[in-house]
Image 1: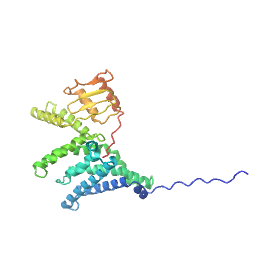
Image 2 (image 1 turned 135 degrees about the vertical axis):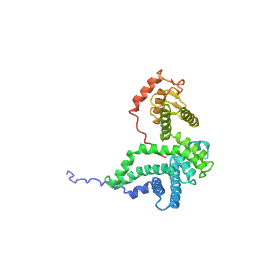
Image 3 (image 1 turned 135 degrees about the horizontal axis):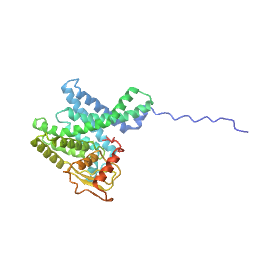
Image 4 (image 1 turned 30 degrees about the vertical axis):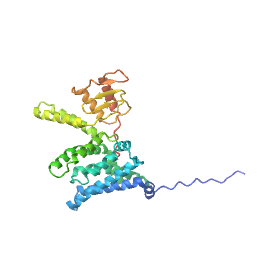
Length: 329
């Protein structure tokens, strides 16, 4: 006898709600909540609705919450702590360690708005990413106005990261001015310089390095105009040379295998498949148009091509260069 019983399909698995999703990812949820608290405290500091004294308290709370987030993120990246020099060197390469130091440097300093913007915007970007995951557990069409706001933040992500890098750079002279005005400590500029060198050498976030290069090219283009006074041109070029000597050596990667350029700022080593930052393309354009860059050490390790031909190849590849969206810390 033929079996006429129809087999019913198995019931679909129960969808995980937002509460269960948050409980299943406790560490990410803790970082998400601390970032939301950082955003709240930063807004209350930027808009002092409760008075200047309360704004100063919100400033410290925002930096302490960011320090907590950075410590959790660093623990996630390097779960096994070791009391060794190699572990410390590996930790200093993480962006989360950079902003842990940033929070500890500025938590007891005089509150200024420029120092809170990197913390505020980084927390906002990271909270945006995790908030989208939480909204997806509620349904694909849940809270459309919140999704539109998050999409706008994601679309302007590169501009936000460049603005953060600009704040990181100009905080260096701000710490010096705070020292002479009696609102900063003697060690703060030196410690912040160390933080800035770590940001310049960051592997995941090249925007600080890129902004330095763009500012240098912009300033050199301005001072080379005939209308610029000679003393101002000389002062700017000496300042650029001094800052370039303080910059750490960074190795960057390009799709042109074997090209090595030695510039005034850093050593550019090309032996990979992808760019590590937009700054490399800026260096090559500067090397092509600026005769002062030392090109005598330019050579090809694998292919006997000219530097000009390599630059043209890189420019041809630049149209396919993916946008840098790594802002993890």
